Amino acid sequence: GDGNAPNRGRNASTVSLFFGSEQKSEFVTDACLCFQKVFGVMPKVTNHATKKMVVIRAESAAIAHVLGTWCYAEDGKRRLPEWAMKMNQPLTEALLQGLWRTDGTVVQTDDARFAGFTSSSPYLIDQVRTLLGRFGRRVRIQKRLHSNGKLSYSMYFSIAGNFLDYGG
Image (cartoon, rainbow, N blue to C red; front, side, top):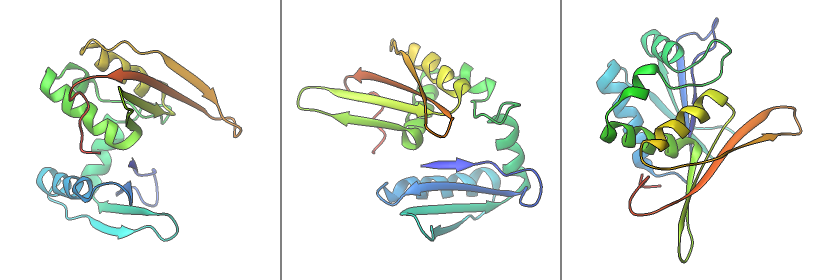
């Protein structure tokens, strides 16, 4: 999954979320319920014209303002709002599970489970590392320069039990 806050200008009140068609339908249902319960907006759900994705779009200046203010740094890179960094452990775990639904992966091998998370935002990746530290997870961040000149940041670590069980 992925999403974007609106661009400033022409579509300043359109918020879009994208989910791969292989992702569970309850992710889409959860996102729609969130739009409805928190903002009173009924989003439109469609299939992407050229990619195997489900697209959720909502027209709401309120949602656009909240996401734009809370979830983006001045340079346009994603970040978590300050209050998210101060949440209690159950809410922090729920937040991490949500983040893993979008930019994370959990892989099961015969004898171990591994988690990975990737972002183009150095702020977000550092915040995720900090949140994982609350659960005793120590991770290293790897920086990668892509052929298009853009950087991405990734982390991988082993997990046990039901940590990061998000239904994916």
